[in-house]
Image (cartoon, rainbow, N blue to C red):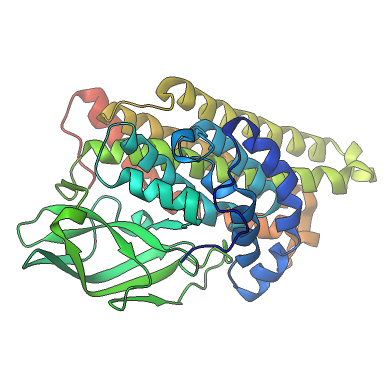
Length: 382
């Protein structure tokens, strides 16, 4: 499925992306409370971001995109998340796949150019199943004439209602994982509308069922051993986990802004305890930002597909998520019982921030991977 726009080739250049996010965010915020209350999908966000060229920003300039770097996308998503966490997280799942595909295109890897051109020229929306099967893929691939038949269930496919293709993996009879793209409109594919979570309720992170979905041999874009380190996972981590972390940090910044606005003009602004809490909120925002900036400085936009890259990205994501969640907790403390109602913007941010640690690598696995790298051990993802 593609987003209908009047000009599919329109794209926002990387240098302008953050400013565009600042301008677009308030439009998305108008629908945030409704989608949270209903658990409904953020359709307006995709329509607006697609027609503006925002979703094609990471496509290389040579392929009619904006050439945005991972860092530029991350800070733009940070700005979007200040206005609407669900819109930012859902579109992050599209953007990180585009970023990873652009990395592959720069190396001349198969299928990358065609997919990127569709994003820029047709408005194709991408998704990923990596939230549920990053290390050990779900789904079985059975050898048939000319390719594979894949059957399985994929969870946490954010943006499924509008995505046309999902990047995923499945495990063959020989125990090898193969990478491929799934057309979400194929008759062998069913989107199960079962997303009903405490937070991030507008992302429509539904399950997707594959029932003997055919993958031609030529459509397999990579292989790896399930549960073991593979270079491609380092790149996915460098592109996806950093942008995801920036998204949660943006949600935390939005909660901070709401706290400041509501306390500044009241007598509580003179309370020593409140002042300390607000100061601690800013401390966590600064340390989270510093961790993310250090990660970008170390990895750049063309990272080495190494275990060290995976460890750097995983630890940065862990640090940022912890700081963002701390901000959410402190924001609730600063305002007290008045925000302990469903739908308050700070309460909504607090719920959205609970989802951060569930994105792989989870907090404990990130530490084990970093330990493996430091000790010179083979890296495993189990």
